[in-house]
Image (cartoon, rainbow, N blue to C red; front, side, top):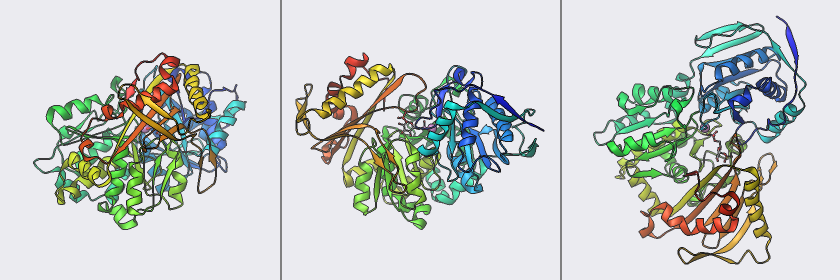
Length: 557
Ligand code: VG1
Ligand code: CO
């Protein structure tokens, strides 16, 4: 074999976002676009690509096969020793994180745009993870971006396509390739974390029914293994569990809007425990008949009940953390238990250092991401099984079902109302104006201490604090600025505005609102009703409707 050096022209738009590079498929199909980015990743591996072992896989979305074959050729050209690839490239993000750690691999290349739709005109994505199994930190993603802007050539070995449907080891030129079953080791790992016996007897009860929806993403085969093979449930306990390159035309995002296939059946059949995961398997939604769990409550409840999960019973809970826009429900659990807790910027990469330092066990984001230090990604199926483990333990204490667990939690800690409004594909200029409007307001003399009033309800809120969130990593002391504008009011409620870093086109504005109540009469109240005055205040201050022309958000979660 011989290594070929191919001249190329750099693109200027390959900056990795919150979670890798995400663009429309036709963008990735431009001449050398994918090759440039993969070469930039390989060149940016700390210590270089020579002699490394990399894990490769993804959610199996449209264009994955072609990109994997390119990665094989580029890896060979760059002196990589070995690629560990999932059969048919079906490899959930959390399972990749686990595989990197279990094998002590150098890192991994993840082919996914997560919850974004897939298909010839939808999204593709590429992300690099480090040897701890977690997303590359900003120092590495910055290096990748810098390389992509100046790249003049890439290296490959011309190789025939490798058959990725067959398990086992092969050679591709100088490169070893191992095609693995990516499901079994991950499910075996979950079995060491949770009390599967307790879960099995719980889900087999006559008054308990389960429905998991894979949304035609990568979790299907994993869910079949867990729910049907391990827990002995009927096939009807899982749906949309065949991975599809375009997610069957759907939007594989587990929330009340996009996971309507789950919501409908749960309500119709009055399923007691429903759950869904996103395209690449790192997100989760917990939803039983008449009982929706907000992700912010979910992580707080898992933290509160951690001791019933063998992994935490044995290892202890070292610390808790949430992303900044996530509600403060988790903080109250941490305080009550006297456990250290952290507030980090949006994106799972910020949890990794704390976990590696042994200071963080359980964490979550409002965006349907929940997880722990068993790996270094958020983990949809982990959260789903954690909930089943907790429901089984709660039942032993006379607390019944999701609703029972929620009310029990509110009675102990009070209730945090939380909602997020997304305005998708807004023009970048308009989005920037909204940000500028708020920054301007924050600078105003006497803004802190002033009252903002909502006309619809005669409520008013006194501004206690404003800012643009800056995070200093407690472990490596790196500083991340401009992570989101926030206004906190003197009654503890707040709103946050930030721009998404995962979109592939235009800008997405996210508005997060939160309100706390320890008034028992409110525990059953409707979230949107309760948050209305706050939302009104946020929209007024940012002039969002004026600047963007959007009267309603695209999605409310
Ligand atoms: C969004 C979420 C963030 C999450 C990220 C990746 O980022 O807000 O909490 O970590 O997606 O999730 P942004 O920058 O668009 O707000 V996943 O499941 O798409 O990898
Ligand atoms: Co995802």
